[in-house]
Length: 95
Length: 160
Image (tube, each protein chain N blue to C red):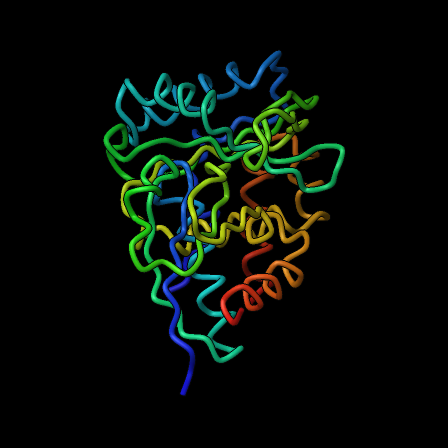
């Protein structure tokens, strides 16, 4: 059975770049056998959205003391370093 | 259904070879176009600038001339749309990932978004466009809005 993980996607507005990243990561992880339950929010709302979250993926800087793993990346926007980031996300979710 | 990016950008929302001194100048120019075309409210430009100051949208593509995607919250948007500027010389935007760092930007896609689920395809097309370095350079070299639209249209057909 595929692994189920809760991932919170954050960006400045909670609707633009986090939407792109959410779609890209959810698709890629499905191929790697991980089902992602995705939620999105603004970077400023992250702290109130962490209940049950396994990983936060953000396109913008977040506080460092959230207590859950955070990966900040532009790879799904720029295309630069995408494979590496996907490996890192998979490793964090399986870890 | 897949819709070409060219089909979603109005000619009047495109400004080519802009000689701008700052990111703010480009943002105000594009916001004024979107407002005139009925996509955004008068509050949009200031809201984009305020957001840019706190959470910038410069995307380092690893090139001499990079990309920015300024946008803001849905309450300033009337209906979804895009405005596009190419700059005759890059101006600095702050890096989305690290606001302390600046990114020289020559291609500015201003986004008017109000629903995350309906605009995913448009966003994906913009990202595919900017990730194509050859196409990005052609867009920068285009002299007119029509040339630029033709490039976007051709790129879309090429993918299918």
